[in-house]
Image: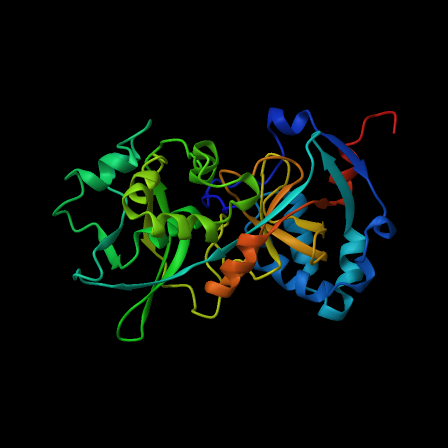
Length: 344
């Protein structure tokens, strides 16, 4: 699965009609497969990265308490102040992966680097759809306005940068520019993978980011037209204030952490909340992660995108991931029991 666009809509509480239709069951920590073997101190460190931004009394109190715990006491902290809550909406669990791509580029246009990464023009912020991807890239609406952050050498990698929503641009002098999601044109996202299946160009079992790249490069003219199938277009902003050794900014405007941060649906999972992940597949994963990001395709109580890191290797691992399993939300004790029916 190709990871969805990063969104900046924060959701600190579960308050939508969709979440109201879900069922919730309180579990014990003994019911969490692999709980005792995890590195709870690593999870606590990632939790502390964003818990101070949660604008809710229950979470603020827990964040203050968490700062008093040393890493070797992190398991005790989670078991004392949280309860595992299984939230289900009738859909099977699905784990996919996302990453921060790295592209070759330049701050100036050249014959090699001729595909621009754009800032968002002011008129595109108006309510409702703006120009489509085709209109933006084939018209003159962006010309001569100084909206280019950088130019890259590969339109396919640029397309996937837009889907990931953040990345690094490696410059010829050895430097780099980091970009993050800066807005979109308001058109719905349409999967080019699904379109290739519809055309019969790829089988459903073949679709992956790697296969789509290969198909577009093998069929340059048809590939260019295929990218226009998705009218959604993402603009960027520079985020060079983030230290190079840290991950890209997630929806909470804080860096996400490799294999400890997930993108989840804030309709069911409060951003900043710990989530116990039981991912199956060829490489099972049992780990406490933190919901610090969102995505346009990450919808549902049992849907999560796991952050795999930066660069090509992370991209290969993330692109292969499409596994079942279970995710269990960690909620403050009083909030967990308040979700149960009165007769509990």
